[in-house]
Image (cartoon, rainbow, N blue to C red):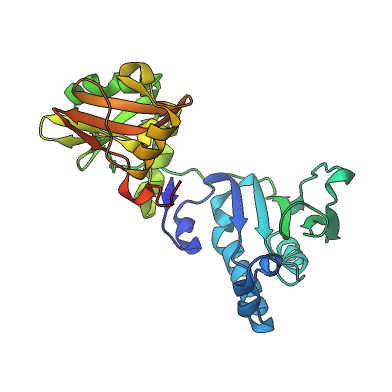
Length: 298
Protein backbone atom coordinates (compact mmCIF):
# COMPACT_ATOMS: atom_id res chain seq x y z
CA UNK A 1 0.00 0.00 0.00
CA UNK A 2 1.35 3.43 -0.91
CA UNK A 3 -0.01 6.45 0.97
CA UNK A 4 0.65 10.18 0.86
CA UNK A 5 0.74 11.17 4.53
CA UNK A 6 2.71 12.95 7.20
CA UNK A 7 4.25 10.68 9.88
CA UNK A 8 1.83 11.92 12.56
CA UNK A 9 -1.13 10.69 10.48
CA UNK A 10 -0.11 7.09 11.19
CA UNK A 11 -1.02 7.55 14.86
CA UNK A 12 -4.56 6.63 13.77
CA UNK A 13 -3.22 3.05 13.53
CA UNK A 14 -1.92 2.26 17.06
CA UNK A 15 0.09 -0.96 17.46
CA UNK A 16 -0.54 -1.79 13.80
CA UNK A 17 2.90 -2.55 12.32
CA UNK A 18 5.28 -5.41 13.05
CA UNK A 19 8.17 -3.62 11.33
CA UNK A 20 8.78 0.04 10.57
CA UNK A 21 11.63 1.27 8.37
CA UNK A 22 12.50 4.96 8.67
CA UNK A 23 14.60 6.03 5.70
CA UNK A 24 14.98 9.45 7.27
CA UNK A 25 15.29 12.79 5.47
CA UNK A 26 18.87 13.80 6.23
CA UNK A 27 21.67 16.20 5.36
CA UNK A 28 22.96 13.81 2.69
CA UNK A 29 26.67 13.82 3.47
CA UNK A 30 26.98 10.31 2.08
CA UNK A 31 25.94 11.58 -1.34
CA UNK A 32 28.40 14.46 -1.62
CA UNK A 33 30.94 12.39 -3.56
CA UNK A 34 28.57 11.78 -6.46
CA UNK A 35 26.08 14.67 -6.23
CA UNK A 36 27.27 18.28 -6.32
CA UNK A 37 23.81 19.47 -5.22
CA UNK A 38 24.23 17.55 -1.95
CA UNK A 39 27.35 19.61 -1.18
CA UNK A 40 25.68 22.90 -2.18
CA UNK A 41 22.71 22.19 0.10
CA UNK A 42 24.77 21.14 3.12
CA UNK A 43 25.10 23.41 6.15
CA UNK A 44 25.50 23.02 9.91
CA UNK A 45 22.04 24.53 10.32
CA UNK A 46 20.56 21.88 8.02
CA UNK A 47 22.21 19.13 10.07
CA UNK A 48 20.54 20.46 13.24
CA UNK A 49 17.22 20.81 11.40
CA UNK A 50 17.40 17.24 10.07
CA UNK A 51 18.25 15.78 13.49
CA UNK A 52 15.22 17.54 15.02
CA UNK A 53 12.97 16.37 12.18
CA UNK A 54 14.15 12.77 12.66
CA UNK A 55 13.29 12.87 16.38
CA UNK A 56 9.83 14.19 15.49
CA UNK A 57 9.33 11.26 13.10
CA UNK A 58 10.30 8.83 15.87
CA UNK A 59 7.75 10.39 18.22
CA UNK A 60 5.03 10.41 15.56
CA UNK A 61 5.32 6.75 14.55
CA UNK A 62 6.29 5.14 17.85
CA UNK A 63 2.79 4.21 18.97
CA UNK A 64 2.02 2.62 15.58
CA UNK A 65 4.70 -0.05 16.19
CA UNK A 66 3.51 -3.16 18.01
CA UNK A 67 5.22 -4.07 21.31
CA UNK A 68 8.02 -6.43 20.35
CA UNK A 69 8.08 -4.89 16.86
CA UNK A 70 11.23 -3.97 14.93
CA UNK A 71 12.33 -0.41 14.13
CA UNK A 72 14.94 0.04 11.40
CA UNK A 73 16.51 3.50 11.12
CA UNK A 74 18.76 4.66 8.31
CA UNK A 75 20.30 7.85 6.94
CA UNK A 76 22.70 8.61 4.10
CA UNK A 77 24.80 10.92 6.22
CA UNK A 78 27.90 10.71 8.47
CA UNK A 79 27.53 13.17 11.36
CA UNK A 80 26.75 11.83 14.82
CA UNK A 81 23.85 14.26 15.43
CA UNK A 82 21.67 12.44 12.91
CA UNK A 83 23.01 8.99 13.77
CA UNK A 84 24.49 8.02 17.14
CA UNK A 85 23.02 10.97 19.02
CA UNK A 86 19.58 9.99 17.75
CA UNK A 87 20.17 6.42 18.95
CA UNK A 88 21.05 7.84 22.38
CA UNK A 89 17.83 9.89 22.35
CA UNK A 90 15.80 6.80 21.36
CA UNK A 91 17.33 4.65 24.11
CA UNK A 92 16.67 7.32 26.74
CA UNK A 93 13.20 8.43 25.66
CA UNK A 94 11.56 5.46 23.94
CA UNK A 95 13.36 2.63 25.73
CA UNK A 96 14.38 0.75 22.58
CA UNK A 97 16.68 -2.26 22.83
CA UNK A 98 19.33 -3.51 20.46
CA UNK A 99 18.68 -6.25 17.89
CA UNK A 100 21.82 -8.28 17.32
CA UNK A 101 22.79 -8.41 13.64
CA UNK A 102 25.57 -10.70 12.45
CA UNK A 103 28.09 -9.08 10.13
CA UNK A 104 31.14 -10.26 8.25
CA UNK A 105 34.51 -8.51 8.54
CA UNK A 106 34.85 -8.75 4.76
CA UNK A 107 31.92 -6.34 4.44
CA UNK A 108 34.13 -3.62 5.99
CA UNK A 109 31.28 -2.14 8.05
CA UNK A 110 32.28 0.18 10.88
CA UNK A 111 30.21 -0.60 14.02
CA UNK A 112 29.50 1.89 16.81
CA UNK A 113 27.69 1.26 20.10
CA UNK A 114 25.58 3.98 21.75
CA UNK A 115 23.69 3.21 24.99
CA UNK A 116 23.87 -0.44 24.03
CA UNK A 117 22.45 0.17 20.52
CA UNK A 118 24.61 -0.80 17.56
CA UNK A 119 24.97 1.49 14.58
CA UNK A 120 26.40 0.28 11.28
CA UNK A 121 28.37 2.80 9.24
CA UNK A 122 29.03 2.18 5.54
CA UNK A 123 31.85 4.40 4.28
CA UNK A 124 32.22 4.91 0.51
CA UNK A 125 35.99 4.42 0.58
CA UNK A 126 35.51 0.95 2.12
CA UNK A 127 32.41 -0.43 0.39
CA UNK A 128 31.03 -0.57 -3.14
CA UNK A 129 28.48 2.20 -2.80
CA UNK A 130 27.83 5.59 -1.27
CA UNK A 131 27.87 6.34 2.45
CA UNK A 132 25.01 5.54 4.83
CA UNK A 133 24.14 4.57 8.40
CA UNK A 134 21.68 1.98 9.69
CA UNK A 135 20.53 0.61 13.03
CA UNK A 136 18.01 -2.08 14.04
CA UNK A 137 16.09 -1.82 17.31
CA UNK A 138 13.16 -3.48 19.05
CA UNK A 139 10.24 -2.02 20.97
CA UNK A 140 9.85 -3.55 24.45
CA UNK A 141 7.20 -6.23 24.87
CA UNK A 142 3.87 -5.16 26.37
CA UNK A 143 0.12 -5.22 25.99
CA UNK A 144 -1.03 -4.80 22.39
CA UNK A 145 -3.84 -2.38 21.57
CA UNK A 146 -6.61 -4.19 19.69
CA UNK A 147 -7.64 -2.29 16.56
CA UNK A 148 -11.38 -2.49 15.96
CA UNK A 149 -12.76 -3.81 12.71
CA UNK A 150 -14.16 -1.06 10.48
CA UNK A 151 -17.94 -0.63 10.72
CA UNK A 152 -18.18 0.33 7.05
CA UNK A 153 -15.98 -0.74 4.21
CA UNK A 154 -14.18 1.57 1.79
CA UNK A 155 -14.18 -0.91 -1.11
CA UNK A 156 -17.29 -2.36 -2.69
CA UNK A 157 -17.39 -6.08 -3.58
CA UNK A 158 -17.13 -6.65 -7.32
CA UNK A 159 -20.44 -7.84 -8.83
CA UNK A 160 -20.58 -11.61 -9.20
CA UNK A 161 -20.92 -11.41 -12.99
CA UNK A 162 -17.72 -9.37 -13.28
CA UNK A 163 -15.93 -11.53 -10.73
CA UNK A 164 -16.78 -14.67 -12.70
CA UNK A 165 -15.48 -13.14 -15.93
CA UNK A 166 -12.08 -12.05 -14.66
CA UNK A 167 -11.29 -14.39 -11.77
CA UNK A 168 -9.35 -16.62 -14.16
CA UNK A 169 -6.96 -13.75 -14.90
CA UNK A 170 -5.07 -14.33 -11.67
CA UNK A 171 -3.57 -17.35 -9.96
CA UNK A 172 -5.14 -18.70 -6.77
CA UNK A 173 -8.22 -16.54 -7.24
CA UNK A 174 -9.91 -18.27 -4.30
CA UNK A 175 -7.41 -16.55 -1.98
CA UNK A 176 -8.35 -13.08 -3.27
CA UNK A 177 -11.18 -10.69 -2.49
CA UNK A 178 -12.45 -9.03 -5.67
CA UNK A 179 -13.39 -5.39 -5.23
CA UNK A 180 -14.64 -2.53 -7.37
CA UNK A 181 -13.41 1.02 -6.79
CA UNK A 182 -15.06 3.55 -9.09
CA UNK A 183 -14.55 2.08 -12.59
CA UNK A 184 -11.67 -0.22 -11.62
CA UNK A 185 -11.96 -3.87 -10.66
CA UNK A 186 -9.15 -5.27 -8.54
CA UNK A 187 -8.25 -7.74 -5.86
CA UNK A 188 -6.68 -7.94 -2.41
CA UNK A 189 -5.38 -11.02 -0.59
CA UNK A 190 -8.01 -12.31 1.82
CA UNK A 191 -5.56 -12.60 4.70
CA UNK A 192 -4.74 -8.87 4.68
CA UNK A 193 -8.04 -7.40 3.53
CA UNK A 194 -9.08 -6.12 6.98
CA UNK A 195 -5.69 -4.42 7.45
CA UNK A 196 -5.91 -2.79 4.02
CA UNK A 197 -9.36 -1.48 4.88
CA UNK A 198 -8.04 0.09 8.11
CA UNK A 199 -5.22 1.81 6.27
CA UNK A 200 -7.29 3.25 3.43
CA UNK A 201 -9.95 4.52 5.84
CA UNK A 202 -7.44 6.31 8.06
CA UNK A 203 -4.85 7.53 5.55
CA UNK A 204 -4.65 8.89 2.00
CA UNK A 205 -4.06 5.87 -0.24
CA UNK A 206 -2.29 6.25 -3.57
CA UNK A 207 -2.11 2.52 -4.35
CA UNK A 208 -3.85 -0.06 -2.22
CA UNK A 209 -4.95 -3.03 -4.37
CA UNK A 210 -3.99 -4.89 -7.52
CA UNK A 211 -5.95 -3.40 -10.46
CA UNK A 212 -7.22 -6.05 -12.86
CA UNK A 213 -9.34 -4.12 -15.34
CA UNK A 214 -11.12 -0.88 -16.09
CA UNK A 215 -14.81 -1.15 -16.91
CA UNK A 216 -15.75 0.49 -20.22
CA UNK A 217 -19.45 -0.09 -20.83
CA UNK A 218 -19.76 -3.85 -21.33
CA UNK A 219 -16.05 -4.27 -22.01
CA UNK A 220 -12.94 -4.60 -19.84
CA UNK A 221 -9.59 -2.93 -20.43
CA UNK A 222 -7.01 -5.14 -18.70
CA UNK A 223 -4.78 -3.22 -16.29
CA UNK A 224 -1.08 -2.78 -16.96
CA UNK A 225 -0.35 -3.50 -13.28
CA UNK A 226 -1.75 -6.99 -13.79
CA UNK A 227 0.97 -7.83 -16.33
CA UNK A 228 3.66 -6.97 -13.76
CA UNK A 229 2.14 -9.00 -10.94
CA UNK A 230 3.34 -12.47 -9.94
CA UNK A 231 -0.37 -13.29 -9.62
CA UNK A 232 -0.99 -12.80 -13.35
CA UNK A 233 -2.24 -16.00 -14.98
CA UNK A 234 -0.62 -15.80 -18.41
CA UNK A 235 -2.48 -18.91 -19.52
CA UNK A 236 -5.74 -16.94 -19.48
CA UNK A 237 -4.60 -14.68 -22.32
CA UNK A 238 -3.42 -14.83 -25.90
CA UNK A 239 0.33 -14.27 -25.63
CA UNK A 240 2.73 -12.83 -28.20
CA UNK A 241 6.43 -13.61 -27.72
CA UNK A 242 8.41 -10.67 -29.13
CA UNK A 243 11.92 -10.39 -30.48
CA UNK A 244 14.14 -7.69 -28.98
CA UNK A 245 13.57 -5.14 -31.74
CA UNK A 246 9.78 -5.43 -31.55
CA UNK A 247 9.87 -5.37 -27.75
CA UNK A 248 11.80 -2.09 -27.79
CA UNK A 249 9.35 -0.63 -30.31
CA UNK A 250 6.50 -1.62 -28.00
CA UNK A 251 8.22 0.01 -25.00
CA UNK A 252 8.80 3.19 -27.05
CA UNK A 253 5.15 3.13 -28.21
CA UNK A 254 6.30 3.17 -31.83
CA UNK A 255 3.95 1.98 -34.58
CA UNK A 256 3.81 -1.81 -34.53
CA UNK A 257 3.36 -4.21 -37.42
CA UNK A 258 2.37 -7.54 -35.91
CA UNK A 259 0.52 -10.33 -37.66
CA UNK A 260 -2.15 -11.52 -35.23
CA UNK A 261 -5.89 -11.91 -34.91
CA UNK A 262 -8.17 -9.20 -33.55
CA UNK A 263 -8.46 -8.80 -29.79
CA UNK A 264 -6.27 -8.38 -26.72
CA UNK A 265 -2.72 -9.76 -26.67
CA UNK A 266 -0.27 -10.02 -23.77
CA UNK A 267 3.17 -8.93 -24.96
CA UNK A 268 6.17 -10.85 -23.61
CA UNK A 269 9.91 -10.81 -24.16
CA UNK A 270 12.40 -13.26 -22.70
CA UNK A 271 9.76 -14.74 -20.34
CA UNK A 272 8.86 -11.28 -19.00
CA UNK A 273 5.44 -9.64 -19.34
CA UNK A 274 5.60 -6.19 -20.95
CA UNK A 275 2.00 -5.05 -21.39
CA UNK A 276 -1.03 -5.13 -23.66
CA UNK A 277 -1.99 -4.44 -27.24
CA UNK A 278 -5.39 -4.67 -28.90
CA UNK A 279 -5.70 -5.48 -32.59
CA UNK A 280 -8.72 -3.90 -34.30
CA UNK A 281 -8.77 -4.54 -38.04
CA UNK A 282 -5.52 -3.09 -39.44
CA UNK A 283 -4.90 -0.98 -36.34
CA UNK A 284 -2.89 -1.99 -33.28
CA UNK A 285 -3.50 -0.02 -30.11
CA UNK A 286 -0.53 -0.02 -27.72
CA UNK A 287 -1.66 0.15 -24.08
CA UNK A 288 1.80 0.55 -22.57
CA UNK A 289 1.59 3.54 -20.15
CA UNK A 290 2.58 6.72 -21.97
CA UNK A 291 4.53 8.11 -19.01
CA UNK A 292 6.68 4.94 -18.87
CA UNK A 293 7.72 4.81 -22.50
CA UNK A 294 11.40 4.64 -23.43
CA UNK A 295 12.39 8.02 -24.82
CA UNK A 296 16.12 7.51 -25.45
CA UNK A 297 17.44 6.42 -28.81
CA UNK A 298 18.45 2.78 -28.85
